[in-house]
Image 1 (cartoon, helix red, strand yellow):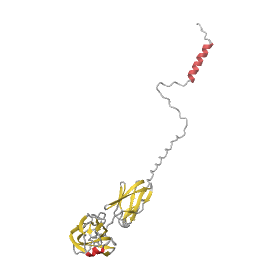
Image 2: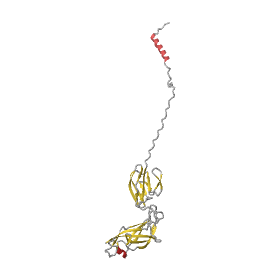
Image 3: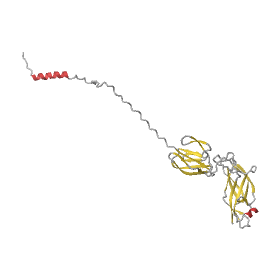
Image 4: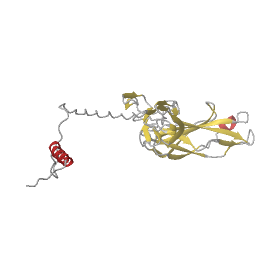
Length: 306
């Protein structure tokens, strides 16, 4: 039998290959996934959720209010006047009226007092109205808090007590001129009648005029006798409300007086006098009353001219 000799180098290569096959890890099949070995047995840390942020409260709007009171031409507090600032308006209070102040608290207002809440700030125009009178004035409303205004005067006559028969009167003649050529000449009246407008004041029930009396006076001293005349009944209707007077009713009154007493008394040394007219009710002849409960009288200044 023939023997073959194997070189030593070849033997070493074969041994090395066999040993490498034993030491290498087995190959994984294609498509399989190896499961990793745990590196630690510690419990995993769960993150603590962050608390929800607290919402920032909206700022409280600044409170703005305007306060004051209204008075009539005599300085008396005037309930029922309309007070307006832009789109905001209220009526000045009756005596001991309830309202809500700028802090939301219940308050008692005096007669003629008002509160306007949440009004616009800065330079504004305040408007007041009552009956047939209006009045506007500028006000500077503070951006917060309360702005106080001085007493505001409306040139009106306020309401009269319920049931009052008061009547207001005004003449269309501001001055009556009487002409006289000399101390012995007769008087010549430049106008022989006076037109008088009547109306019931707010809250008044009106009255009916049926007579009048007139005389000319120097101060309070009569310059002539008093002349009384009946007139066709003049019905003065009731007021339209507590804050509105009644409609105007007009009447013409004859004021010509050529008495001897007046002729002699009216001289150029006493050139000025006053025409005094008083009015009486159609039923019973009682004096018509003014708003103060006194007899209704109008006075027209007179001037003696050449």
